Image (cartoon, rainbow, N blue to C red; front, side):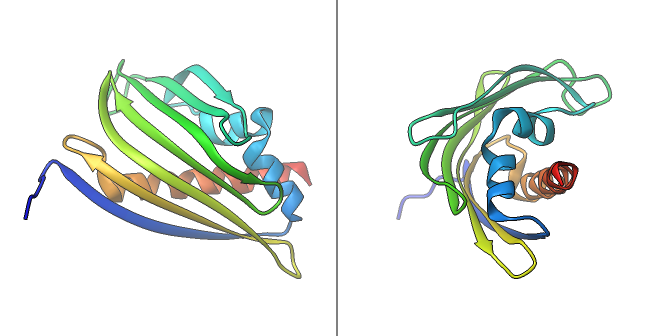
Length: 160
């Protein structure tokens, strides 16, 4: 059997419940103006490029330079993706590659499922990732997504 110790595979599933209709949650995930606020902006880095065209075949790009006081000051993180499947108010499926200063660190398949409830919407976020040698790894990536989904909650609550 062939093995490649330079690749680690991981899947993690994060769930959140929102007191908002699926259309509101979908808008926060798909509208570039809203998404930039919860997904791209941070006081730890400078956004160099952000594009999000949420339709099948549309591009999803986030490039930023890490700031001082981070583990990678001055380095550029590039996340280049494409939307594979988009069903308004129901799901978004995308694939992406991530690189750090030009060196590939991972490839991801990310699925957002929106389930209507009596109180609003349940969101299931599934990430399936191949991490390459020298990447952030599954634990850090999952923590990053937990923070992103907390930011998403704030964005949705601010829309109410």
